[in-house]
Image (cartoon, rainbow, N blue to C red; front, side, top):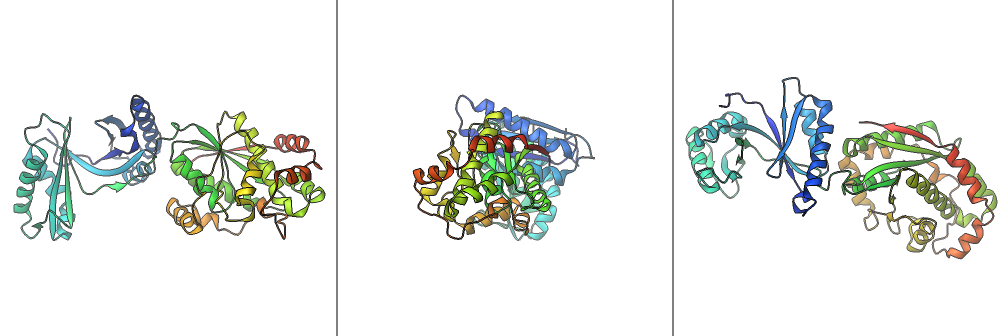
Length: 395
């Protein structure tokens, strides 16, 4: 029997995971594991999967339900999250639970309908019959709220499942995508701007576990600029989980480029060094790709020819999730994931150091390689990697 004041739980619905074939179980196991890890800091929860739904049940009154709801909505692989109350698998019990649990919603509504799902095929009523009978009882309980099956103010959701029936109002959207860890590992080049946190988030949403690389150029860049980047990484951990930021000193490389290379190639050669160093980090952490925030044509170093020149130095795939997006779309996503306000803080990163007045937009690879030949590339890379530090960032 279920007590009158049954504990509220969360029902997490799976997205793309349900479309997987023979390896679906591994995706489900990873998703359950990710949910467990995210809600652990919110209290003691029992998390388990049944019939393509993850149940998140608090084990005591000390659980922080508001914080857990936010955490569940930020787990990649979850398409929606509903706060629900379990009750006995009986029409009267379901209607009683709905009337009690959703009384405030009924007080604010002028019309309602009941939408039912019968996951337990042994239950004596089908979905339509459940909706009709529960709706009939609720219509008697709330005579001032009319039934409207087309455009109701309130939809009462009923799910009859294996263990119990569940009543909830409309679910909140989840993060979607695939569980982190199922898409491999990649190294993302994280600057202090708007684009790279969004590109990192987009790849994490495809199940990619991320390590971050950031380049610093003191005294041309400040401690506040580094702190800003670490804060961006911390904001991303709400979605991606804990991660490591590899901080690589870049001052000597930039000074040598300025001293020895033609000005129009400054940015291209700098980007080529960044790609080489990021690949070195990637191979040290067994990552299979690099991630950048480049968008085609956004700046001089992001023309099609420029991108070809910069990626020529790496043999890893370079993933560019923003490549076809415009700035308005990127800013919108940045606001949605919570990184925009930090990204626009006025602390510039090393990409703005020694910016050429007239950058080359149609470079030829052989010309850039010839300009780069004036540098001892390997010695500069070895020096930069020797100065690398690792910062572990947690939610």
